Each structure stands twice: as C-alpha cells, then as structure tokens.
Length: 58
Image 1 (spheres, rainbow, N blue to C red):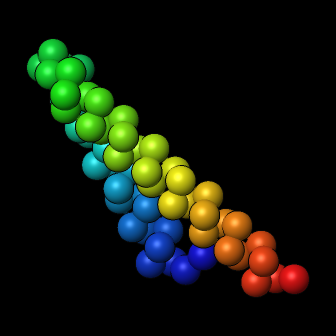
Image 2 (cartoon, rainbow, N blue to C red; image 1 turned 45 degrees about the vertical axis):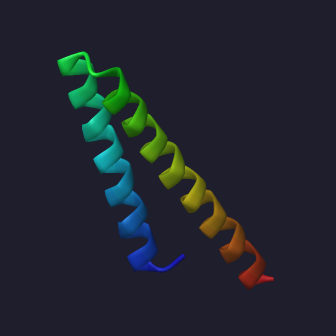
C-alpha cells in the first residue's frame, strides 16, 4: 500500500469520525450514519490495499 493511499484512507476515516461525532452532538441521525458509512468505506479500502500488497510480496 502506498503512502498516499494510507493517508487518503486515514483522512477519509477521520472525516467520517468527525461527521459521526457532529451528528451525535446535534442529534442528526443522517449525518451520524453518513459518518459511520465513510469510516466503513475507508476500512474496506484499507483492507483491499493490504490484500493487494500481500499478493505482490509472493
């Protein structure tokens, strides 16, 4: 996984966490759910990159 990909995924995860927290603080369920979705997407991208890296090493 390239450094750029790692930073992009981390940024997306942090953005999702911020949305989730803001949604909780303002009782905005839609924003909270959107934040959770963004975090899940970032996690899935990171997992996909790790799988690609594992196959590159073989």
